Length: 253
Image: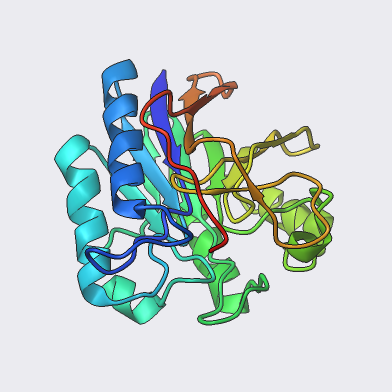
C-alpha cells in the first residue's frame, strides 16, 4: 500500500503578504503539520497554482517548506497561476513517480497567464512516453484543471475539454492501466466516478470557492488536502481532510 498526500492551489505570495486576507504560507504549513501528524507518507503530489505570482524565490520557498515536513518523492505540476520556466529554474521536481506497482504521471494542462486548460501535443507525448517507459502495473494521472463540470460556470468554462477522447487515448497507450485522476483548480472537494476510475479534486491549502457558484464566490470551509491509498491490486481509497485548527478565513476586501 502506497500512501500519497495530495495538496493543491497553495498560492504562495511574497514574504509578509497575504492573499484575500489569508497568510497562504501559514495555511500551507498548517496543512503539512496536520498531515504529518496523521499518517505515514510515501509521496506528495502538488497539483498546481503553487504560487500566486511565480517568482523563483517563492517557488524555492514552496519547495523548502514541503521538504521541511516530508522527505519523500515529490511531484509538482504547474497551474494557471504558475510560470513554468521559473518552476524549472527553482528546480521543482516535475517528473513522474514510481511507487511500488504504481506510476503517478503528470499531465500539464496549464498555459502561463491563462486561466483555461490547454493540453499541448508535446505534453501529451511526454505523458505517453512516461507510461511506455514504466514497468508499473497501475497509473494514477495528476493534472491541474478539472476534467468534469462542477456546476460553477465561471470555473467550468476553463476545465479540460473532450475528456472522453483524452482518457481513451491515454488508456490505449501500451502499458497504461489508468486507475484514477487527481486535480486541483476548483478549490473544493470533487469526487466523480468515471469509466477510467475516480476523478478526485482536492480543496486548496488556503481559501476555498463556494460550490455551485455562478461567479467568483469564496466559501468559509477551512483549508484541506487529500490522502490516497494506492493498493498493489490497483484499488484506490481516499480520505479528504480539512484543518481543524487554526482557522483561516478569507475576505474579499
